[in-house]
Length: 571
Image (cartoon, rainbow, N blue to C red; front, top):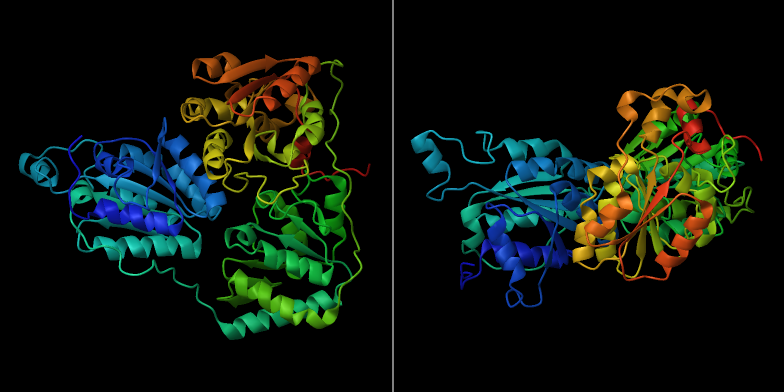
């Protein structure tokens, strides 16, 4: 390795400001344009008191998913890759961070003005490796999925540009893209001057007061009001404030799938996780009976289209610094100010007696008969109800497991992580790597579809290398099950053929895990499953992959309801 420069560099500045922002770990994929920054990170004698730990990943997809999940717990995250092939591969995870409000910092090194970079290319009319020829292409690709996307080409400007981007990420809870010309990693620059400034979100005090008064008046008039706890409550650190509002008013609350476990689900006001028609009956019925739903800090996806179209004029949505009350809008009303103002406006209303209470945890039974010792989705998740411990973090993939696992009680805040809005299959397995680093005392438990797992299988190797301890249940049925249900559910209910594009090859997942340095076991019967559950729980220091072999024609009832938009039936 070339010796590091004896003076303070752009590399050092970026490390120190990231550390100050709360970062401790960086998920990386090497490349010559960015590699010099890794030398600075890896030198533990450098930047005393500001050291970062670098974790090398097997692909940009893995690095991005791991960083995204890390940021959900830690409050900021970072993935660092090289120009072009790396940065453009990282776009999918960063887009997920943008949609679901995670301040992921995407770092890319790029060609600069070194002897073999842009001047060389201009002189000899050649294309630089990893480049399209448009040297703003990467930055432009990130412009619509970040709070700020910048190219740093001057060492003197680096401090203010880095500060501006990190401030935007922390303020808006959105990702940022920072591209740095590669000769600048060793370029001298000034040291940080004062604390990193995080801009406050714009606030219209009159709009805050008017929105809170409007909503409070509706709450007081409503016979069955309901709060809906959203993801911004967690992202902006408002869990205590939201719990206080629920406690003060006595109004029950539900969460979305994205925001499940925003509070520990032992909270007396909690009703359930609302997922539209795939919800359990008690939760679905509570939302249906409510005459006023106050959505507090959540984006609404098409999972809730029936609910939104039915209740648009009567519902309140506070999200992204805007409060909508029916068809009235109040702007520049951040959630922090709105919750505080609403709590104040409702102080004289007293605490209500609860009009709804949480029902028992329910996993729907098999939708058709299967042999008694066969593992099915329903039987597996019914077992999870009592097997999961409070010190586990549940991580379902965008798969047939997601809408079932949300009915498992989570008795710890932030104990359930899902990419429920962006919905990129394969996310959960790589996310478990990031979660195990951000919260090492909470063991990640992944429920992955086999199709999604095949996209990021190599993350098991990274987990083993860094001695992480996730448990990955690969639900192996050789079908993109949720896609099949959404495109033709009659393949399950009437035995019609599966769509050829939804059929995937069978892998020896347990054997693959062993080859990648982890531990693996395959189970097909309930007896084998029980033995495996005992084994993996008794080994808390290892990565385990449990290949759960399922009938190809099995599907959770929750998914069938989602596909057909049919509500749950009373028990």
